[in-house]
Amino acid sequence: MTNGEETTFMRPLRVVIADGGGTTRAVLLGLANDSGFELVGEAPTWDAVVELVSSRAADLVLVSGGPDFAQGLSVLAGEVATAILAPDAQSAKEFADCGAFVVLTPAVEPEVMAAIGTSAVARAGDLRAARQEAENLRGMLETRKVVERAKGVLMRRLGVSEDAAYRRMQKASQDENRKMREIAESILSAERLYGDGDQPLQPDA
Image (cartoon, rainbow, N blue to C red; front, side):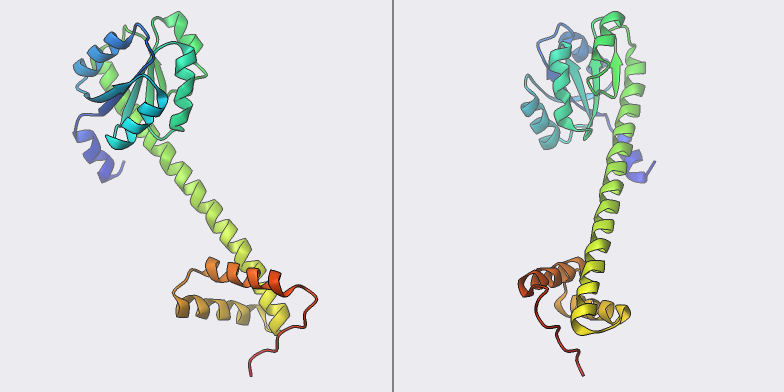
């Protein structure tokens, strides 16, 4: 756990209640209070919940309502920890596919709720970090593909080696204060304009 996460958990978790009109709302309010959470808002629609999560830096969303309403929490896309309070153990099975981090029953003790909430927030943070890492890796792979294609264009049109083509792109990146991917995309864009039928450019002396 990072220092930032440790600092986060030193304060009460900031909670939003997604109120789908379920009978569990009052129980959720009591649990949030008894568990030491800070209630920062509640809303009856998912668009409003998303807005509250963003504008009020919520850590956790507690969901009250039936399975049909709970299915809507997919709009949060794993950006924040979510917990559903099912009326009883039997009905909890109906919430299994709703995408929540945890499904609880009203019998949960406040101390347990506090621990589960903290754990859910940590899991949500891990998931966000993993998704960001995956996105970064995809970006790096795509950049490499674009740079390799651009190198091939320079090698063919200028009659230079792979290393020389890369150095030209690197120098252009430094001189123009642009990322290598932007340089590579400019080269590929120019290549599309020139067309494969044009005569290759002459290398510099």
